[in-house]
Length: 229
Image (cartoon, rainbow, N blue to C red):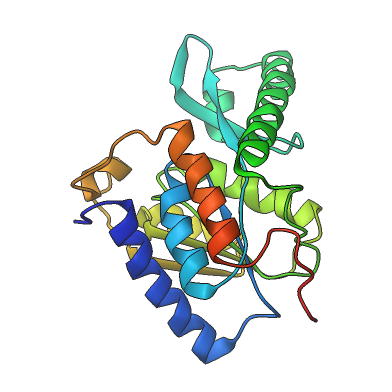
């Protein structure tokens, strides 16, 4: 059981430092948080590794009439990942998916831009040929994690590492085919929800996201600093 996201992030950062000492990263990595819950975890990682922090919003696509049931996820640049088995079973049309894809991609772009501007960040992190560490507070189905990874591949990222304090065991096995490496502390079989592994699992408000991005910007490397190759 983790006390809160900050404590979980500190433990995760220690695991990542061990990975760096054994394998090394290609230059200074970029930490990319999956909001909202992944942001306070990612801040601890970014500060510990002295590297820039950015966000990548990946929203789930809910089933018709059952918005809490994730049938897929979409990122700001329109990358879509679907649970094909579930969409077939529920007879979900391409028209429904395409309509939600456009709407969600637009809203994620607006949210990313709003958070960056409020934190004083001039531009998204340049991930081309860089090691990217994708951080969340926990991974259940893996839909948003896969969408984020594919979006980063499209942007030219080099090695992509998924880091989360807790990942459902079956999901972690699937994600091994997507990510170059996975770093976690717990990979339980009896996974019901991410919140079951935290004492404090409050909903992260916009202001906490903005403050984390601002803190990383001023305590670590600048978001737009050129990293020596």
